[in-house]
Length: 107
Image: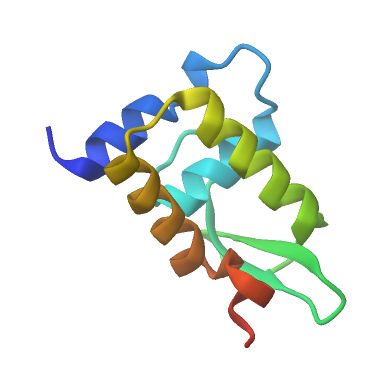
């Protein structure tokens, strides 16, 4: 199994009974996976630290939450998933590439 598939499998929302549909959509968007409808395909961080998301149809018109809350939930999910070091590094890289890294990729 390749690294992406391993991380996708360990972070699949079906493994976490308490995951919200919004968090499932965020994780799917970060990993480039369609687990929800609508599917999130992009993220933007505002200058005041809030996250907006884009659906496949375009436009960053979905307010998500503060970046700090998204980050906290992401880290908690990674901890709960018990990823290997290699898997966690890959997942964090996906998070940063999705535009949610330090300063939302704005620095």
